[in-house]
Length: 521
Image 1 (cartoon, rainbow, N blue to C red):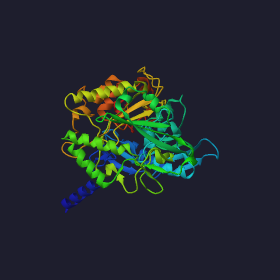
Image 2: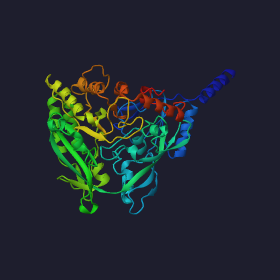
Image 3: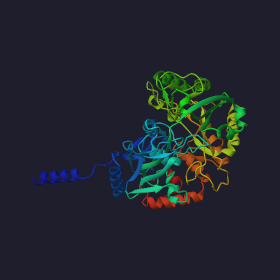
Image 4: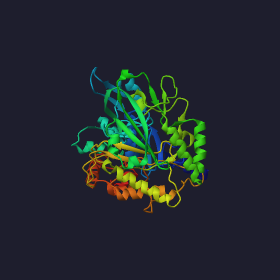
């Protein structure tokens, strides 16, 4: 009996021991197989800001790292540190309040919680005759993450950084307390919070600038490559409220799309742009063709021909009838035309397994011609080997632009140690490409377009980072790109950011890989 009692006591003691925590991967929007974090021990869906603060304080007491996650735009494994981390999702924090737009006024304000998506806010504001203007981005991205990571629209004439539309924000700091930071370009706390990478804490609420809703038009023309590379690129973009270019390197063509305001009573058309949505049949055909392009360059050439033809036509439907719009220009309400979303009978491309790699770097717009010519030279060097470079993305290589906006870590900040003139704005080279679903998932001519394990200097990322004072997009680059590009960031801005980071998060519970690369810890 004593022996049995001993066994019973030991068993009871074992039951009282904490169970081992099994870590798991947290994924990007592409789903399983596309990790943004490797060592996640818990995912918590915050139901309120009070609840969020409670979880943060619990993590502090257990010496566990914390990262926020919303509906996002994260492409690679840079969201967290590789240490044990709790993810706090903000998707349920969708409050919109304190709307104010005086009748006849030219601007107003509204408060939004971090999990509100651009599409949710656009619908709310449109019902009240308002919009956020041009400080916006894709429908599937939430406000907290877009501000933290420096998201932007494409414009040189108008403010296009999402953070440029924020007047105040509330952040849960490294003690689990809520801090409010107000816009002030002379305050280092604001300049750090404006593009914080989540390193100061979790953004929970923001006060946004809003404007009376407007109708806009979208127009697109096709340009020969040489007319862009040797042309007045700034002059192609600056006159319009928002504008960008799409590059088709195999065809040596560009699409130039631009948008601006029209009187609301000038048209009854209500265009709605298709952003990322496809049918099952389209997705299956594209996947088969692009997968074969892993081995057959002719498949990639055919893909660019098809995508170019499709993108030459309006990717819009009439919102009131769901009928296809077949002619440019297209007219409609602000957000519906500038961004739009999914068609009601289609799904997002990633839901069908169409995933991609990307690289996005920002350059002074004054260097736009030289940068694009250098990329063309790299493409032509491949042609000398018998390899024709193609775009394997549905809209080509995306060339975007940003109005200058001052903060410490933004892509379009000014007065930096590189001596370059960023005051006229930036050009962003966004180079997405299809990730094969077969074999080792490497692309055709992987050595050229590889953004991971960048060991050779002839690759496009290395060349651009080494030869130009470029800056990385904070969610659309790999660890290797960040490590190589950090030399192009202003050391004084990094130092000043770190001072604020240590003030907000002295224990470093919000650290991630990017912060580690930037020397914040």
